[in-house]
Image 1: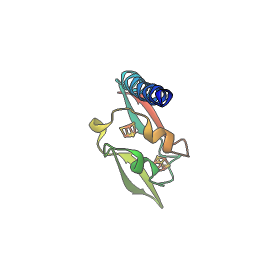
Image 2 (image 1 turned 30 degrees about the horizontal axis):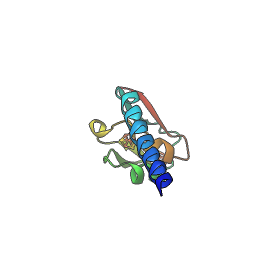
Image 3 (image 1 turned 135 degrees about the vertical axis):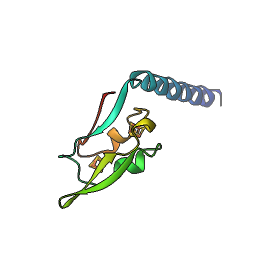
Image 4 (image 1 turned 90 degrees about the vertical axis):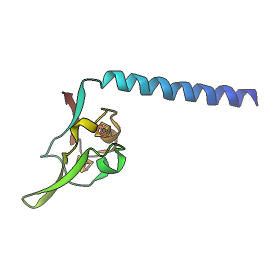
Length: 92
Ligand code: SF4
Ligand code: SF4
């Protein structure tokens, strides 16, 4: 049973440290949509907990754009969700 507590404690510590690291690393960054690559699949919107994205029609395509830039914490969750490399973190 003790080993289970050690494993859970280790995982919790790892989660806390990685979140702190991501926040420090992303402090001066913000998300940007590379519009040419965006397919409008909306995976980024589903994975973002801060209501950053919205969508617009460009010609015959629907593409994501950053609607609420001040909400972005640069956590990178949407980057991992996008399968089309259409997102990047850029300097503010
Ligand atoms: S996940 Fe990527 S391709 Fe899909 S809508 Fe968002 S930015 Fe566009
Ligand atoms: S980096 Fe995080 S907060 Fe910013 S748009 Fe992506 S998921 Fe949302």
